[in-house]
Image 1 (cartoon, helix red, strand yellow):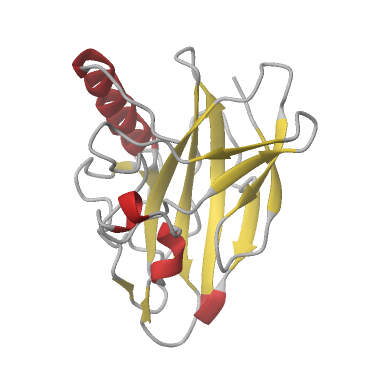
Image 2: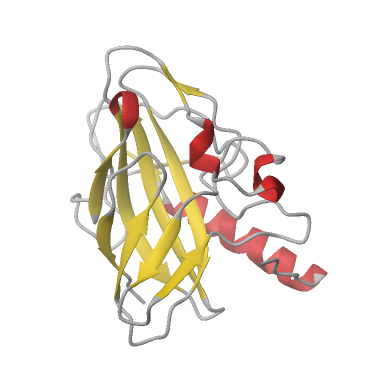
Length: 194
């Protein structure tokens, strides 16, 4: 299934992606944690210091919504799943290497669709499953077939983490819990806010 967007919609999606990326604060290495450092919007694959746990999101506790274990010591901590008025759900989190060695990001995380694979390593294989509505939601794409998710993932060194996001079509407004799935990772239920 291919979704086409107008130029105005693409700009809006890009703006939403930037906002989602900026919403992910990273705890500072210094003594104070009152100011969170913001992740650059175009550095989706830039490693983030993981000396401290995931930082608090605005209005959220430090506890992630879910932690999914993957292969080779990879851990995905989902920090938020927010519905917006444009009909989208943005899932934010941190992909961390809990192993003792550097890990190359598995190509299988991109999924198996040719259109997404040709755009490089990403989290394009992620899905949300609405068991109540009996529907599966795939990561959205722009008109060039690029997934609306973190791209350019290559290698994560031991102990490091990368802030990630994925954007999906929103399930009906009365659906507040879905199952998050990503190839090679365990599945987990998550709650959608907003």
